[in-house]
Length: 395
Image 1 (cartoon, rainbow, N blue to C red):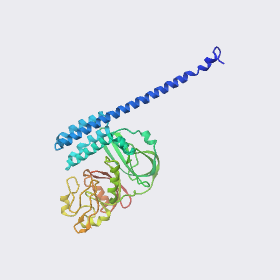
Image 2: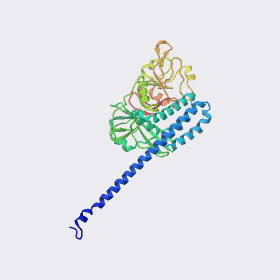
Image 3: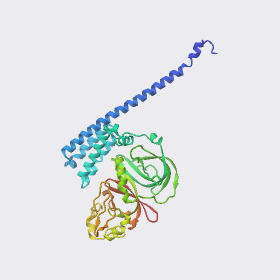
Image 4: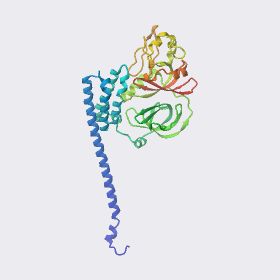
C-alpha cells in the first residue's frame, strides 16, 4: 500500500487517465461536428450554385443561342468559375467543355443537348431525395462530391480475367488523365481505371493493351458503375484476343448505359467480326455487300462518288440507302442499290476527330477483325485491333 495515502486517495489516483479519455472523446466529437457542419455548408453552396445554373439556362433558352459562337465562351468561363466557387467542380467541368461543340457543323443541336444535360443534372440534384440510391450517388458524383479511395476499396470487389482493351490520354489543365479500359471475360463487365499525372511526367504504370490480368476490381458506386480501382492483382494470364460483341447488340447496350446514367459520355466496346471502313465499322456479315457497292478489299471505296462523299476530316457523308446515324451512334441499315432485298450492313460511325483510320484499315485488309473502341455520343474512337492471327495492334 502506498505510504501516506488514505484509502480514498488510493482509489481516486487512477482517475486522471479517465479524464484524458473524456477529453479525447470530446475532441473527436468536436471534429465530427465540425466535419458535419462543413458538409452541410457545402450542400448549401452546391444547392445555391445549381439553382443559379437553372436560372442561367432558362435565360439562355429565352434569349436564343444564335450568338453563342461569339458570346458563349466568355459567359461559360464566368459560369464555370462561379460553379467552382459553389463547390460543384463536376458541373463546372461540363460547362468548360461546351466550347468543343462550336466547331461542329450541327453545333446548335449539340449545344442544346449539352444544355439539356446540365438542366437534367441540376434538377436531379434538387430532387435527389426522391431518386433511387444508386442514381442518387451517380448524380452526386457528376456534381463533384468526392468518393474516397478508402471507401471504394472497403466495398465489394469483382474478380475476373480483365482484358486491357485500350487506353486514352487527355490533357486537363496541368494534368494528364489516363483512362485505361478493361473488359471482364466471365462477367462481361466494363471497367475504367483512371489516373492522373502532371504534364511532362510519365503516367502511372499499367499493363499495355492486349494484356489479360487476373485481378479484383473495386467499383465506385453509381447506377452504372464503370470507374474502378485495382484492389488486388493476382497476375497476368495468356488468354488471346478478348471476346467481342456484335454490332447489332450495341444500340441496346448503349441504351441501357444511358438509361442508368444519362450523363455518360464514353463507354468501352469490344466489337467482334467487324470490317473497318473509312468512316466507321461495319458488320462483318455484310462485307460482301460493301464490296459489291464499291468498297475494295482494303476497306476503301473504289468508285468516284466515294471521294466526294468523304469530308475533309475523313468522316464519310451518308450516302443513299445508308440511313441516318441515331442518337446511339448506330447508322441504320437501309435498302441498297438492289432494293429491299439488298440491305447495307449495320454501321457504327467514327468520331469526326478519328479521321480516316489508316492503321486500322491496313491491319484489317478488308477482313473481319476484333476492334476495341471508345463509344462517345458523336461516334467511336478506335483504341486497339486484333488481327486474324490474334496479334494486337494499338491504334
